Image 1: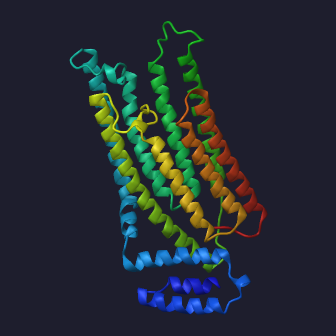
Image 2 (image 1 turned 120 degrees about the horizontal axis):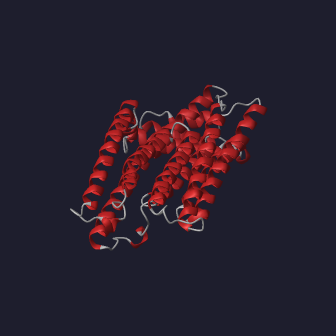
Image 3 (image 1 turned 60 degrees about the vertical axis):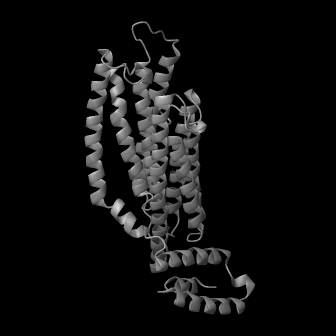
Length: 355
């Protein structure tokens, strides 16, 4: 069963043509020796068939949705809006802190309005939201860039946590044995190491030159990217729903002291992000499984699998605190970087260029 036959079916213009070509394909299958039928070909046939049906029947019009939401114009608009919201949020937070310190209003119970440094929390939160958008933006374009965005997101979360660590310490009376001071130094070290790893990751990515072997490989790459657009469009919808659920739960818990869902009992540094990285892991695994039907190169599959493992380590870090949290994050960054180095070395030492 050849790829040409499968592609011919995929390029059918309507359901009637799909049925006609499918019947021909079945007849070919009966005349084909069993050992000549590739397992990967069968998987690819199923993936391409579903893709063709979705496109022909207009069950979901993800292309239009994706192109509008993730166009360069939309990205620039969201960046501008994020900047404005970050500045306004910072000013509003400072005003609330001032009103609380003057006893005009009482927001001390929330823990974010007793120190002016806490005002930095709000703009960083908006920046993190924009970084998440960029992560989904780059997901269909580059698996490597998507992982880089994950590292940038987790580094910004740690930076935001550093400011929270500072507000917990009374530097006039603190001693070196103070655990809060220890947490501050651990987080500062984590930020520096993570920033260095991200820089090295960017350098390794710049050396990554993947070129398709032929026109057929270009066709497969384009179809794989189209499927990733479907997944990315679905992911952004899921993330919006997760955000709404967490926002409603946050408001409800602020008013009543109880959570709508018991599993959402997490602090401000991990709220939403645990579920976000869980959804991201499932998305990465789905893309990884789809890639098996298009590309059979071991080192490419190893790289993609390694990137999924790096995401899982980031997700696990939200379930722990202290030094173990930092160790998991740094292990994720180091593992992802080393996997990329191995893949780059393979590309340099082989005459076959991968896509």
